[in-house]
Image (cartoon, rainbow, N blue to C red; front, side):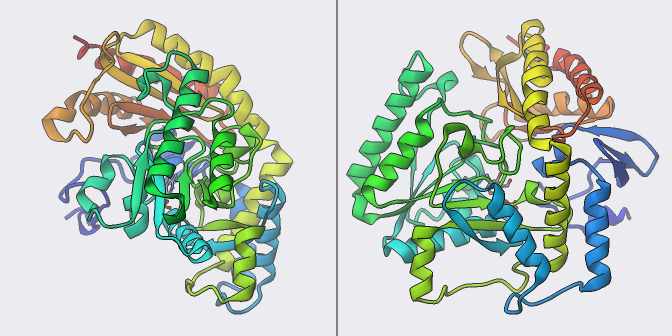
Length: 437
Ligand code: PLP
């Protein structure tokens, strides 16, 4: 039996899988057991931001392993303090402390718990087009169909529409109109739910796996203002976009604003050892100088994970990785994907920023009918499955979610690798074009 069949796999029906087994990697490539190289155009699940086997991160983990592999959170650790300092140094103003977790979902759980304890209010607002993790609170916050199977309807979460001009919920014609109407809608939701019942608003400042949606300038500042006015804790979920993915250290930086709490994971150390966290702003921090924070994790600030963060963040500073991501998007990926859209009728929309992009595939450009319906599986998902297989057959790893293909190479991918990936997408889109009506 293939040992992979002994593994219980997240998100999929269990049973044998026809997938390559990976045994190595370097830079933007991973290598399977047959020696075949694959270009990683998704940085795995959008976390290997510095690519594979980056020597600085590997060396940092090895050095810490030789010194002290593990330590309880109750003891002070030099490497944990150093990681916290490096995270705070690049964080938006006012976010001066870090609770370390081992994943993104834990970061979201803790941020919401902090907000509820701080405000003594029960409810949390989140966007319909969002993904915040798959544990109890975070899956309820998640707005997209991944929530459906787990939704008990009793988590104190209220969903709202964020700005998304391509499929505007507000009938807007311009980004400015979309922003203003989305903010007016959010204000109505807050007023009708009752501001005194709302602890927090959780928002991906650039929506990641639920659509790669970049908000219009001013939207995040508007959200910040609404939260401040109503005493609501603004939680920016930067698990996917933080640490350079959008071409800025944090996505909120693009709009010149700062949340009260900021969740992160993935890019903080390129996922070499599991690490996440909550950046805690002064307001919420003060609450827990008066009363103990009533929660914790055995592996909070694990030394090997923190060492990987120190190695990754040093490399990002020295190699100018954040600026490289901005350039990759503006000079290579953006124009390249626009070029593909011009030649392929199945591409309904191209969106993105920095090293995070999506192609939204449609049956009909005019009607914007998705190539597969939301939550499609099996036969209903055949067009996207065929597209994904065409990519894999040509040695390209992509992330296909619903009717979208997400493009998120390592931030330090070379122009040549980016061009090679775009060339494969060009061929695979011909497969998707065959389903256009
Ligand atoms: N929040 C966002 C925005 C994410 O994209 C993810 C994962 O993709 C999570 C939270 C959950 O992170 P994790 O899978 O590490 O629990």
